[in-house]
Length: 625
View 1 (tube, helix red, strand yellow):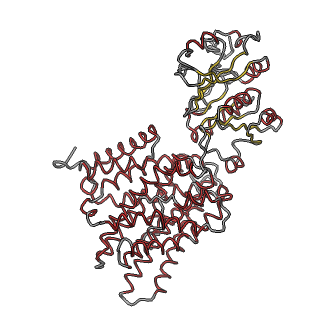
View 2 (spheres, rainbow, N blue to C red; view 1 turned 120 degrees about the vertical axis):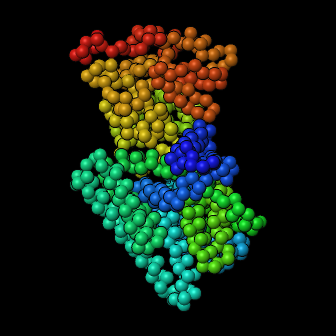
View 3 (cartoon, rainbow, N blue to C red; view 1 turned 90 degrees about the vertical axis):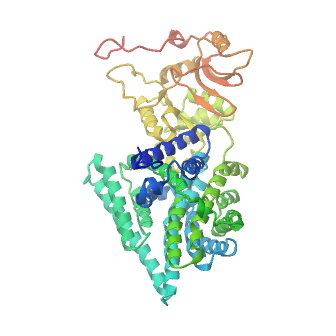
């Protein structure tokens, strides 16, 4: 397990980083808190806190290249999420944050570093270039937790991913200016180096993305090798461009990801989902290693100026940069303020700052050693601050929806309209979609929000803001379409949150599908046609509140025919599948479908409420008994 007392073997260190990183993400999901905060805390505890795992000691010199490659893959995956069609009305804002925000942010950061943090102009200019970045490793988990609307999410995501490699190149330019200035070289040489780096990275990234896209489209790579080929291509592009122009690899792999994302590959969805899962692991590992590697002695170099510097960055530099950049874009004031006061820094800032801090110290720049601890303090402060304040600030500014998570109903019918009316009356957002305009008539007349079109279409993907919807019910009259919708949306919404009406022949061996297809069967497993008959005969969907005096067992005795399909509390909405625990506590409202009181309608096909709707046939031919 260990080579010496207190020293972990590398494989044990790797396992510990993975277990703690993924465990922190899971715990953050359970507690509904920002995962980045828990990962930083966990790294600080096992590193400088308990000294259980010190990366430099237990893993050795591989830590730096591992972090560099992980950041490259994270940025490439970020590029895969940047589709131009999804930009929409955020395009002008993104353009301004890159073109205007980079030089303005660089200049303001350098001034803050010099006049507030007390760094010399050499260190301030280099570190100021690095501070352009806002960190996709941080923004992505925060956006996943905050569930912001599409436009402010796009602004924060695009800015973080695009500006990250630009910040690294800006630091290179500033460092070369410091280095060559002592040699009497002209500024033209530095600027030419900067342009060369951008041109090289752009060209290599575009060519690699084009070749991969063309190879995948023409079938030059078999399906089972696409992900390995993609990983190898990313590593080759990153390392190759870095060998020619240092730190240009980040820009190259980002552009490569953007090119592939916009190539409209048939297998793109599968590739992106795999990369997203890999990125979760990489982000976990990188932040644990980052926090565990911090040198407590280096932090002692900081004084009150470090705290003042963080405050100025959060309250002056970042807001001024964003507000100046977005001036005249027509974006709502609330969204501009939200982006202006959301600027967490991530692992790229610390990694690049550590590299150039060492280079400046080697050149004899006295305050070069202060860059790394300043960067770490800035990362910790902004991650914790924005991690806990992003959601409250978005709600305060009116950007985030304070209502309960919504329900997406696919298929216009009596049943979905009734569900929509019941949920909307409880303050739950509801969206009813259908490919038939006529089938949406009832939902429109009921005042529900509707979408005419295919929920799987590009128009829906880029035109609908589904961030406030957590549950999906596929209730179309076409069982195959319901299964397709549930299967396609399950990775995005979570398989436990995607439901569908029972298929007509789901118990037939000839028609039974694997568990990986479709959603969870709603309620007692009633199909579309049967449910529509019941609704036509007078059944209704309603919410029934449970109390101390009248609990679930009491309600069930008085409503033996009713089907429980969901629960609504003050904090959450749930749909329920066959086999779920239906019991609930006082104050919770049951979402039920059943006959109106004393209307004489029949029970559900004469079936015992405690029994399943059907049983698998004994006949191997698949015929129903």
